[in-house]
Image (cartoon, helix red, strand yellow):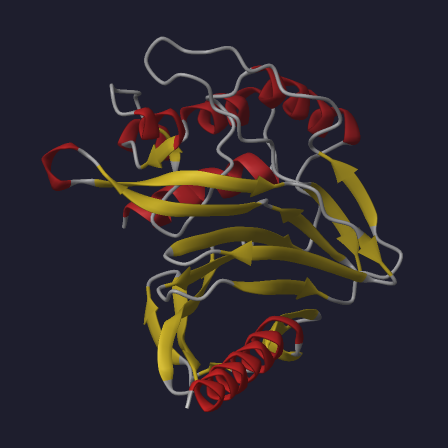
Length: 294
């Protein structure tokens, strides 16, 4: 009897390892966006299925939500919001929510970037001095600008977070991981991440038909300013507005808590810079702030 039980346990363990291996290492790739020469795909575990898209349209936004399932069980959602602004710049916001107990690896892939010209927005470490109210903000500038295939892109970073409670029944995102480091090889950019249970992933990209700045020098001036003024550059963009560093409290988790603050969503830095050094980037950030508040 004992021997049969041990054999049964071994078989169950062996089958569990096969399933685990399949979930973690067998992958497939699906196209999630293919518009006007811009192709984006998602590489995910084969056993995780993306459901049929549910599409809603409102003002500037087209939002597509796909349920993610594992052998028929809900494990989360993948949401893409395509925002088209008055100046014809498009911003794509990605959000993945792992609502399950199962961690999984995902790669978001940007194709058709042959002969890309890139300009890093993180050429040196940021100047990160602790603020008496907000503490330190360890986030980086966005990855940088990319020119390829007649298009111009500003690529945001990857942000992995979990929800933590706040006072008065509020909620915030506790930053767990930021990844500003991507490479482009053979015309393909891969943004890979590990999404733990009960966590979120956010990233974004701007798409334009012309450069975001009037000149290389104008772009470099803003990069240097943003590196030295951590509360001026808005890094963690979402359709509802940028997630920014919240005031610290006695709760240690607020050291890395991010949420929405109206006066920063309005982006006063872009307003000021656009008056003295107009650019498509600042105009886009201001239009995006208006769209987020609608």
